[in-house]
Image (tube, rainbow, N blue to C red; front, side, top):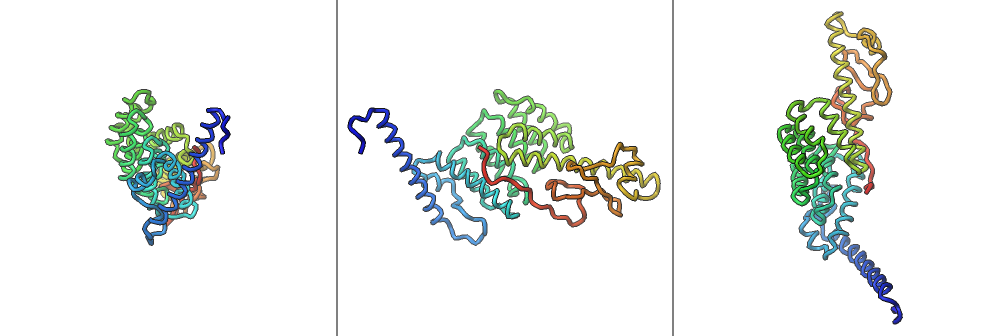
Length: 315
C-alpha cells in the first residue's frame, strides 16, 4: 500500500514502475500468444507469424517495446542460422518488416537488411527485391537520413549490378541535408567506373566507416579482404599468361613467377600466406574459407563456407 504521506514524485515513480512491470508481463504473454498461433509450417526456419500488420494490431500499443524485441530476434535468428551453416533465411525478411512496421525509425534494422537480406546464400537471404522494398519504406519514413539512400544504392550496386539505378539513388541521397560528401563521389563513380575494384573498395570502406552495427562492420571487413584477394589473383593470373607467352611454358611455382616478374617478394594474401600455383597455372589462395566472398583463387568445385557473424546486436 502506498503511504498517505508519500510525496508526488515518489508516487509517480511507483506508478511508473508498476506500469512498466505490467507492460513487460503483457509483452511476454503477447509473444507467447503470437508463437502459439503461428502456422505449424514444416520449413525448418519458419518460426514466426509473418504478417507485420497482425503483429502491430496484436501489440496492444506497445509498438516501441515490441520493435526492440523483434529487432533482437532478427539479429539472433540470422546469427544462429549462420552459426549452423544454414543456406536459407526464410524469416529474415518478415522479421525485418515486422520490426520496421512497429518502429519505422529504427535505422539499424534497415542497415542490417541492406547488408544481409539482398546477398545470395550463404552470405544472406538472396532477396534483393525485398531489400529494396525495405529500404524504400525506410526512406519514405526517414527522408532526411542519407544513410538509407546509401544503403539502397549499395543493394543496386553490389547485388543487382544496376549501376545506373545505383547512381540515381546516390545522387538523390547527396541532396539530403548534411549528406556525406562521398555520396556525390559515389554517384559519379557508378557512371564512370562501375564494377571495378577501386569502386567496390570505396563502397565497402564507406560501409565500414558509416556503420556502428558490429555484424555490418565485420561483413565490410570480410568483403574488403576478399576484394584484395580477387585483385591479387587477377594481377597474378595476368603475369602467368605473360610468362607463358614469353617462355612457351607455365611457371613451375609462384616463386619462379615472382622472380620472372621482378616482384619484390613472393606475393601473399591478407593473412600473410603465399599464393599458390596449380599444375595448370591457376593462382590459388591457401585457405579460401578465410575469405568467404572471393570470386577468384579457388580450386574447381570449391563451395564457400558461410561467413561467421555475432548473434547479438551491438546497439
